Image (cartoon, rainbow, N blue to C red; front, top):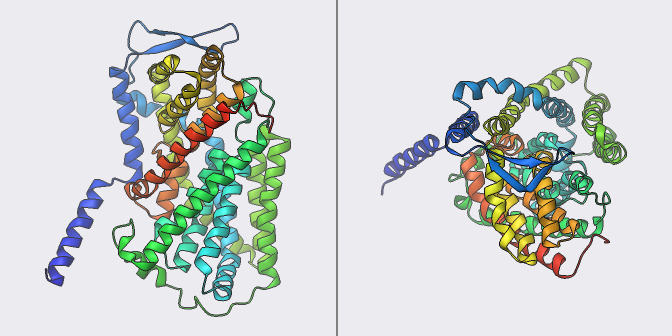
Length: 475
């Protein structure tokens, strides 16, 4: 095959790929339309509620008639969806502004140039490992959708190290999701709903988080080594990212000096997250308010310390906020998916259908079954709080009937909620991150899916072992 024929073939393949992968806006709108259609197909149903208003998992009945949501009614839910997601949307925009200010000080660019120069023979492994671990801990102790604003740092890392955009997500979205999904502080709401001591089981969950962190890091480092040895093996399906990496990086291996301004900006960047973790711990009900305030205040402070002028700070703030506006809109549309399902009364039917089989399983396998079921539900209902409000009242009587310890049920819920967020097209954090890194969603799924499945299978082993040893959350 001649070079001209190869070029024509590559262009044809790229054109086909572009046709197969719609813009993320159409992905979300398509899911909303699909849910609208399913309200005509899936029987409407409801769980009974007790005097306290909680769902009763053993009492489900189909509603006498369908309550379908037609496409126009689904479209009318866009505004309520945006309003319902407003706190997260505002936080994401504010965090984007603060993060942009931190980036525009140049401190991260200088730090990476300096680090790569100092460790040019082993820079990728060391730098990627440090960022990966940091992101896991941020996700675990301060994780919200706002961490989407850190994806640009992953992009910068990937470009500096001449790696593909998949790596950008591999050191930002991937580790933050691992931390967010397995962190020891993420089960406060389910624990409260099941009358379990808040933060009990911290030690076991902390150990679990670090285990999955190591597994995830190994996956990323292996992929990096593979594309460094042969760039054509990139999941992106091309090597255009090599040219993009070279743009503006001619000074990659030049010695760079870290000034006191750069160091102070980096210190402020770390301190802001320490404060966020502290305030979330002492006042979880005001977490979003503290997060938003700290990101804005510290962002401006970093701009001032970084030597930026008033106009530069204002322009940088506006740039960061505007860069997250579309991402925020997508997050709002993701909320609409849940609203359509609730309005059509198919949410409970789906949950009932998926949870019914575990009643016939033995207790050990039932814990794995709970994890598996929640893993299946999670891509459609990625909100951990929403799932807890809907599923815990169902899971609790099931676990009681099976004689399972409540702590085990909480852990099963966490593992089920923890990994499939990585491929959820209904989660603004996931698809928004892919958009920022300029990674087609199908390429991201192709890379992360086998890793996600491995972690889910390992979580089955973890939860079964915890049940077998009689773990009650004492450690």
